[in-house]
Length: 465
Image (cartoon, rainbow, N blue to C red; front, side):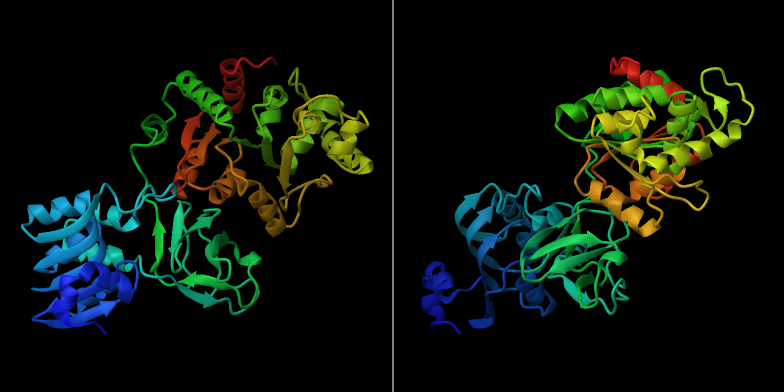
């Protein structure tokens, strides 16, 4: 495998390169290991076989993870072409001889990882067993074929909504982080993305196993401590005005960064007479996409067509004779025109939430329910199709999602969004606000009625109503 050992030791720098080797382990003048496998696999194999104790190790590069494996594994002398500052310090502190040609601050830099994954693991490991357990997860990912269309392999890896990477010969960013999905891998283009079961076909390759070759970013508590503090618990007794002011600041910051804001709303927004506030936010460009159901759209259109919401005068709160028919007449009229956009274009409605959506070209996705009247032409009645329409928007990215007075749509949307998307959920029911947190979604919770929240938000954003 190698040239004469004496010659190798004298010219090991050139020999590693000429022989195409990344790691050589020598003990008692005998070569125990010589390989060209990149990453930590070779070192882990040598550790498991007991090759490191009392050995001379020649490696192309040594970072902190490799240094800890070698020192804790009992290596006598380490030779390397490049060593990181952390590796040099660790070996020096443990009195292990490290011979290196070039010292660097870090071995790798990456906008995605914020550095080397192995290095991150090493900094957070205080023992050999702990480090080895973590590094084993960074071995190359295992793949399995989908046995049927719309069916994952039985041992598929289930995702979180945090930033995720898979080791497929090299570390690849998984697109569209989303909870409780599988990771589809394209073996030719070396790309990976999360997928719902309805998206896979028989024979597709997805990640299987318990996380080997998968790295999910840990949550950095230093990021936006103010937001994280306010989202750490939900209470109905916290200062509402201050909380809404913080949401206004988040909305402003999100737009200044060029990121989109998603609004998820329920019919109580219309019932309480606060539809005008949401309409104003859309008109002034603070909302980019709206998610909801048949109810919020029907009642908003009813208010601006017949002046009522479920037959009750929105301005006076009075019930009118025969008013219970109004929402059905509204649905019928919208169906007559062929949808919300055409109803606006034909002046059926001249104001309101969905009038402003049409006027400002704000995309809306309406997901249907078994209890819907009609429903409106624009409502997607197939639950899977509706979820995919919502997913199409969430995969384009949002910086902020504001969820108001709708538990099911909020939970559904929270499940679709990556962890890094800031989320605010508002409801007058404490249980509804905490439900998102129970599902593992990070959200700032505010227990208050939607009318107060939306009016105060408009005030904080200086929006004309």
